[in-house]
Image (tube, rainbow, N blue to C red):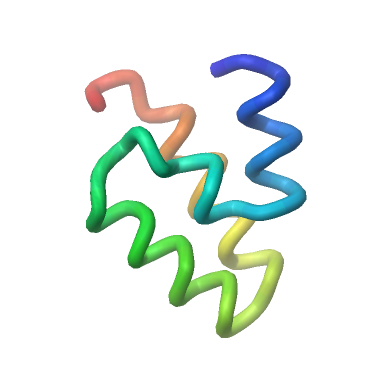
Length: 52
């Protein structure tokens, strides 16, 4: 996980997880619409997952 991805996850979470698949982008987008903090947390968790 690079520093640029972390900064992107903080500024615009759905764009940070664009390489992790469509499902991840949709989930993070919905969480970001519901509230910015849940979207950031979900993006950071998805980016920190080494299995994807």
